[in-house]
Length: 155
Image (cartoon, rainbow, N blue to C red):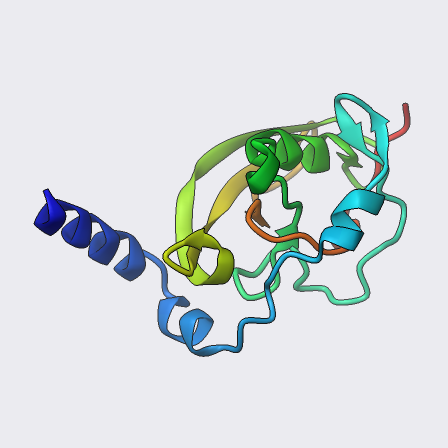
């Protein structure tokens, strides 16, 4: 059983191109609970996210994921959806999304044995020419921003 767990972890760790660089980076992705407690809900369905990201790679790169937190309170997947539900297309279009899987191990004191996996979501909207990939970290929490090219959803 232990060999199977090690093998599975090995497969997961080698499934993402940024594995080596992400694990070599400092443990700067630790949960900042003061930020998580200040994340405001628009409603039970979505966070209130109003600030635009100044970094064009925010959310689009495994090295700069949106950190929604919640794993410690059993709300990790819910927080991922709350983040995505807070976003809209460039002209306010409703986003559609699906989880494409987990990838990209990174250091996290909140992860399994110090390692957390990101979730990769495929995002699109009516009239979009391509599907976007957004990377979300449910293990750690930081202030949330609207990724470049997207807007805040109007409720």
